[in-house]
Image 1 (tube, rainbow, N blue to C red):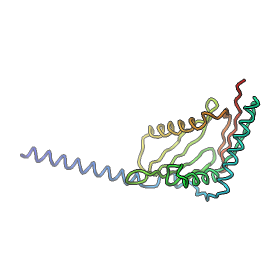
Image 2: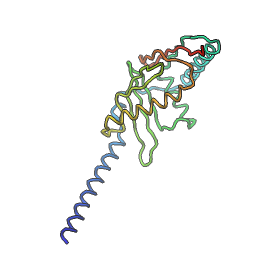
Image 3: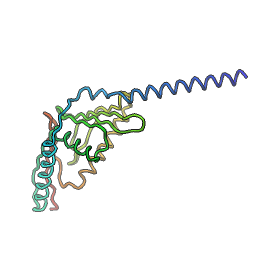
Image 4: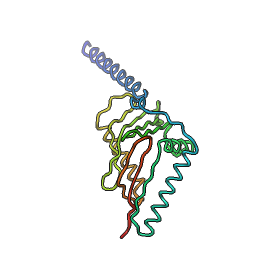
Length: 200
């Protein structure tokens, strides 16, 4: 009888400990990520969203014209974080961006990103610090730090987030006939330079 009572007590204590760990994890998960404190709020505007669309359309037209004429032409496009944030708000309003909140900062050689994602129970607050490198004519995102609330995460989570982001970027750029030669992030803007690809 004592053995059974002792086993039940041990199981009960383990259950209490597990519940405590889960509640602590749930609480940390709901807190604002440390990276968010380093970010600057950006006031969006419809004009900035329109400017984003115009720059993308203009770059696409230049790329298509160069490819159609068989020219290798250098294309440069500079996008500000105000334009990107304004466009994200526009997409969220249309239901085309599956996040509750989003903020992107272009700093000195790096970007900071924050997003609140709808999840069952409580929203996931994520933040990322990273850089963009060029590998074989394509951009590669390198994550330096990834936050999920204030949960302590292993480095393997950073690498997994990095892989997912790079898969998304690759799929978005797969049909763009442009070899990226340089990406600079500075003074609240990202400047992308590339050379059009030809079939010759």
